[in-house]
Image (cartoon, rainbow, N blue to C red; front, side):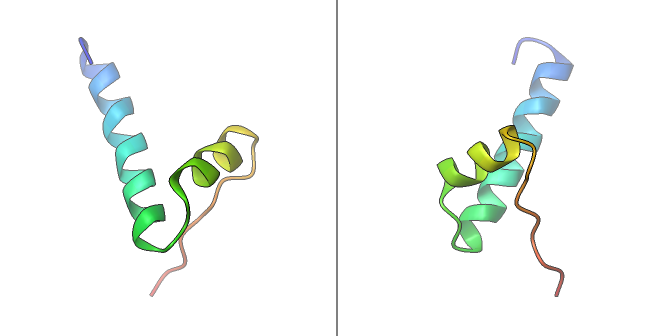
Length: 45
């Protein structure tokens, strides 16, 4: 996070994992599926 780009990437990943956790998805599972090209996408309310 020494650059603005690094901070933005961190914030995006942190937001994604926090939303997954809130919806009952395991953090590691969410990251693995995202890295393999099949990201978990939250449902809209």
